[in-house]
Image 1 (cartoon, rainbow, N blue to C red):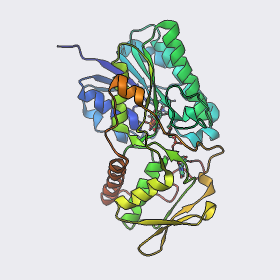
Image 2 (image 1 turned 135 degrees about the vertical axis):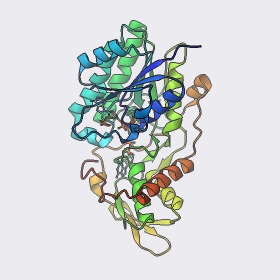
Image 3 (image 1 turned 120 degrees about the horizontal axis):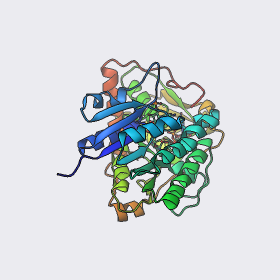
Image 4 (image 1 turned 45 degrees about the vertical axis):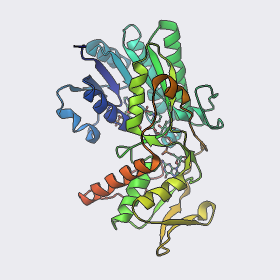
Length: 353
Ligand code: NAP
Ligand code: G4F
């Protein structure tokens, strides 16, 4: 029988960390997760995993190099997945230095801890690095980052390539386009929309406000994307891969689809700050625009070309946008029926996100 592999995941309490951990446990891995210390920890996404005998949690922080060295020395992972990050683009304008400490220098610290081992390394690179580059974007597209988040991720991307070329590390960048799930953080637009639509459909909310409705994104399901991460580390040679669906939708189209999953037809009238989404059945206002949700700089269109991942990894997304949105709205409606109280408009991030 093949030896059981050991994986170390940073960002285990986040969306991708939790879904990847479940995926690796199902494959028979011993899974070690790095958890940030918090006086009020939010470990909801990994609650169910904590009962598993092959699941282990350790306190750690990407801003603490000594801690990362000790974790790698003690756990001796076969595979390291660096998913930990300050992952919110708008928040990165408010805390650019902290974002760089975690996303850029944090990756340097972890690469350095792994450098003299045989561990394979996955870096959570982002389509945000393409920024203002014209879509569709693939591995050959020149990067044009538009935020402190994207700039920090680009530094980490190049470090991964430097460590691969300089030290022979099996280190790969997954350049992932937006991927979502019912576990998505509540401050990201898809989850904000699915929660608000669920609350409106359950009669617990009247309307909500958004920022830029025109941005185009390529949204896939996170469970498809964690499989792609794992596939990259199973290759003989490390490399960099785009994972994307290739389909572009605007935020407005996402909202329209989410309402339709709840049986509500929305129609849009007006322009700019005066644009509103109305319930076609009775004319009540469901969505308004609030400039607090605009960003200092916007990435207008991210649409990926994942041909390389399809050809070399055999990776393909299995979930359509409709399936994803249905999954998210249904999960949020079920949570409300089980008694979770919806928060006020803005959902926990006031002017920040
Ligand atoms: P997420 O839900 O925001 O999770 C981020 C994780 O990083 C959380 O577990 C968070 O811990 C942890 N973290 C924050 N600061 C840290 C620090 N100083 N040291 C160690 N861990 C820290 O993000 P996600 O959506 O799962 O994304 C996973 C990774 O992929 C991120 O690096 C993100 O930038 C990147 N990415 C995501 C997408 C996407 O569409 N989801 C696309 C491309 C790239 P707490 O929970 O305690 O805050
Ligand atoms: O959901 P978002 O906040 O995601 P964004 O900025 O695309 O970043 C996500 O995907 C990246 C991959 O491309 C990851 F690297 C990153 O970590 C993160 O997971 O915003 C999507 C779009 C933006 O254009 C934003 O301006 O939605 C627009 N938007 C409109 N109203 C809003 C809102 N975004 C948020 N968060 N909140 C709003 O009310």
